Image (cartoon, rainbow, N blue to C red; front, side, top):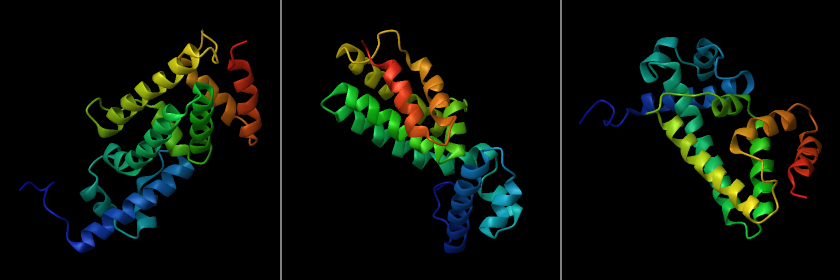
Length: 180
């Protein structure tokens, strides 16, 4: 049994959970470059405990955001399950924008590249494939303009999240994306 496979003692498990919860809060508010000492303080552990549990910032970011990427996967699956491809596309964008406006860290995780072997990057690649299917379905149904590409999504997200009234902004963007 390796160190990674050994079950954690109860206190070590609590510390790890506290660190992940604190990281979600701090990264969500300040982004993934937020000070690690603030996370340790919020989790009520020493900075050495943080580094013992998470040797690199990337390890902590992955622990904090992999569950969020799994939530995003569920949204994508729900969008793919919509009978109407346009409704699926809209659902995907609405939920994705909501996740981004409420969590700065998630936005940064989505826009950055991580080690190709990391769980984060693998989850992002799998989610990217689902996004591509959502886009293709809506285009094949004649609902989404044919020149829209997955590489245009950052433009959509930037436009929709640039204002506090993100729903209105997204509505304007969706009007522009609808096939005529």
